[in-house]
Image (cartoon, rainbow over all chains, first blue to last red; front, side, top):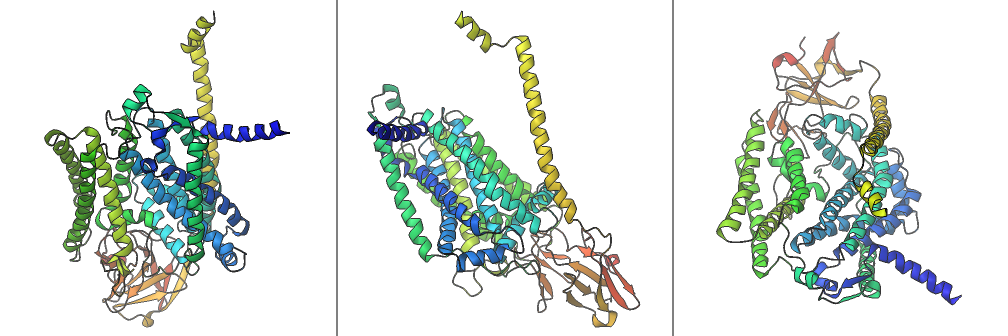
Length: 436
Length: 169
C-alpha cells in the first residue's frame, strides 16, 4: 500500500522533472533574476484553459445568439460574470507578462547559444497569445468587438499582393459577419490552444535541456555553483508565485468587470472605435505612416530582426546579470527615457505638420513610407556605430539598446492611443471633454 | 560491428537517401492536401456569402426630395445619396476606405468624418484629410421616371472624384 502511494507520488514528480531539470543551480533561484515571469505566464495559461472550458458550456458561437449568450452568462449563470472576468483579465495580463518575459530574456542575456531554438519558440508563443487575445475579442459580438475587428482585419487589406485575399479568408466574406465569428471561434477554441499547448511543453523542455535558467559563464565552466534538487526548491517557489497570482486575478475579477457594450451594429461605428490595447501601437503608426508600411513593412521588419537576433554572433549579454553590468544598466535607463520622450515629440511634431487639410497624393508611399523607414534604419545604424565604435560598448549592449528602443516606442504609441486620443482620433488630454 | 552500422546510418547511402527524399516528398504532398482541404472549406464560405444576384436595386426616392448640395442617408440601402450643387447624384458607400468603419455625415461641417481615424471626406466623397487613401466607393445610380434608383450589388472603387461619375437628368 505504502509503496504504491510513494510510487504514484514519485511518478508525478518524475513527470514534472521531464519538464524541469532534476537539479538547478542555486544562484538561478533568485527571484530578482527571473521575476517568476515564465511561471506566471504558465499559470495564466492554466487559468485561461480552465475558465475557457467553463465559458464554452454557455457560449453560443453564432452571430444571432452570441451576444445573448454572454448576457445569459453574466446575468443568470452562477459565477458566470466572475469566470468571464477571470478569463478576460488573465488574457490581458498574459500579454503583459509575456512582453516582460521577452524583455527579461533579452536583458539577462538568456537567448545565447543553446537557447536559440527556444527563443524562436518563445516568439511563436507570443504571437499565438496575441492571436488568441484578438480572436477572443470578437466572440462577445458587441460594438467594441465588432469595430475593433473591422479595423484590424481592415489592416490586413493593405498587405501587398495577397492582402485582400487574406482579408476575405479571415472575414469569410466582404464584411465582418457570421462567417467571421465562426472562423474566429474555431481559431480561438481549437487551433490556437492546441498549438499553444504543444509549443509550451516544447518551450519548458528546452529550458530543461539547456540546464535550467542561464547562469554566469564562469559558473557554468567551473561547475562551481552548487546545484540543489528541483523538488522542492524550484517547485515550491513556482507554486508560491503561481498561487499568489491566481489569488490576485480572482480577487481583481470580483471588482473589475470585463467590458460589454451594446450588441454589434454594422451600420454605426461608435464615436471612438479603437483597436484593443495590444494593437494600439499599430493604430498610432497608421495615423502617421502609409498603411502598407504601418501594417506590413514595419511589423515584418521587427519580427525578422527579433527572429534573427540570436544568430548574430555575440548579440547576447553575459548571462544572469541584469543589463550585463552597471554601465549597461545606466545605458538602458537613459535609452528607455530617451525613446519615450523622442516618440512623444515625433508624434506631436507630425500632428502639427499634418494639421492643414492634406490630400493624400500618390507620393505618400515615399514621404510617409520609404523616407521614415530609411530614417529609422539610419537612426539604428548610427546608434550602433556611436555605441560600439565611439563609446566602446559591446555589440550585446548595442543590441539591448535597439530592443529597448523598439519596445518603448511601441509602448509609448499605445499609451498615447489609449489615453490621449479622443473622438475622431484627435489628440486630447484624458480629462478633457470628448476624451477617450 | 555496431560502430560500422552507426557510421552507415549517419552517412546514408544513395538508395537510402533516395528513399528519404521520397518520404519527404510524399509528406509534403500530404501536408499540401490537408492545406487544400482547409482552404476549400474557408473559400466555400466566401463563395456562399457572395450575393447571387448581379443587380440589387434600391429605390432611394423621388428626385425632388433631394436638394442640391445635400447628403441623405438611405437606411434601407446602407448608403448615402449626395446631390451635387449642379444637380448630379452620387450614391456613396458608408464604409471608410481606410479601415472599413462606417462613417456618419456631419451636417454642420458638411463633411463625412470617420470616427475611427479621423479621415474626412467632402460631399463628393473626395478625401479632405488623410489617412484614407482614396475617395468613398460609389454605387451605380440611375434616374427612372423621376425616381432615383441605386444598384447595390457591387461598390465601384475610384482614385479621385470626377464630375462624370455623377448621374444627371
